[in-house]
Image (cartoon, rainbow, N blue to C red; front, side, top):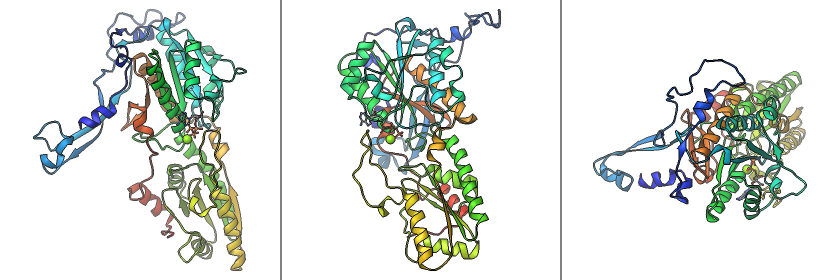
Amino acid sequence: QKDFEARFRLPHLTDIFPHAAPIPSTFCLKMRTPIDGDFPGHYSSDEEWHGYINNNDRVLLKTIHYSSPTSAGAECIDPDCTWVEQWVHRAGPREKIYFRPEEVKAAIVTCGGLCPGLNDVIRQIVITLEIYGVKKIVGIPFGYRGFSDKELTEVPLSRKVVQNIHLSGGSLLGVSRGGPGVGDIVDSLEERGINMLFVLGGNGTHAGANAIHNECRKKQLKVSVIGVPKTIDNDILLMDKTFGFDTAVEEAQRAINSAYIEAHSAYHGIGIVKLMGRSSGFIAMQATLSSGQVDICLIPELLFNLHGPHGVLSHLKYLLQTKGSAVVCVAEGAGQDLLQKTNITDASGNIVFGDIGVYIQQETKKYFKEIGVHADVKYIDPTYMIRAVRANASDGILCTVLGQNAVHGAFAGYSGITVGLCNTHYAYFPIPEVISHPRLVDPNSRMWHRCLTSTGQPDFI
Ligand code: ATP
Ligand code: MG
């Protein structure tokens, strides 16, 4: 338990500046100040507000019960106790803040691939910073690259600039992979006078954000680095869901439905849909569950055979004989062991995957030709159509709260943290704890079994 507390302790500016004195937050008072003469006389700014989050407020992760105090062992602080609680810190506005708004220059950067909701988060970070009273807000164009590429200039941001950006997908600031090293990024932060950095991106981006945070500490810079996890795959540890995931599942329905209609309207039709999910099959699983039109769902967490008596192809033959058509939904990271290994990497150093969707399509056509059975195979890869759409309503809300909490976290003096939804509450996490490895679909979970019940598929091993 002690170890757990130490691991989940949030790095704070006072770790390196022990004498930094907090000042009272004006956040809520400002919230209550009439803007441009709206709501005249409605709010009294000296009214007490009870919405602040205490630094000790926690979100319970789980309670672990042990059969005896000895088996709880070192994990337990109290020698008589047989259970321990694991928790994380609640996100939200603090009554005492560690930055004077007039001294803040905040920057936002978006890295990696596109994900629905990026603009919603950017927008909300800007709006919340303005509510705190920050005047200097900039966007760094095209990911970390924007820190080093002299041709790319900072984008000034204000409520006016971001007002309607959530109405379209993509990122106002642009994204990229690769880019400068951490040393160069920190030098650039210093040069530009940036002391709050909001980083929107996946595991790679967060590894970078944590390295930036550590480098700033080493150089004794008063900089707060706050991450907002952007992963459409929903593969971040401890988080209920990440923004964009809900939208992706919803959009994936359209692809699955089209594949179903194509398959259903053809004689012996087979529709194959490839969805996102490099190491985790959450999108494929949820889209399968919600569509109810998928016969075979393949995810990276589970090995499968394509050929052989228990393989996917012989099940497809069975489906054509019994149902007349079939729909396959495969996650991009599934079945990589079946494809020829390459050592090709992208600009960020990620291994470029072989295209499992195309492979299944080709092998299916070959198989049915060989056994002399007619099959009409259609393949849909909606990846880039899904990633570029705007966030749906529930992701819009998630993004809004994440963006607000990112700003609260920075003003509270934290750095090297990221924000997420955990057991239905918003929480702050030290970055290394959530990116050590991807969150995976548990093949023994009830959710995966519900998925299998829905498709009716056997094990393909
Ligand atoms: P996605 O989910 O879209 O892949 P990602 O954040 O994982 O998002 P990457 O392309 O892997 O996307 O990384 C984004 C940025 O983070 C790149 O500019 C890359 O240089 C940087 N980066 C990746 N890994 C690290 C690392 N270990 N340390 C420092 N920077 C990193
Ligand atoms: Mg990544």
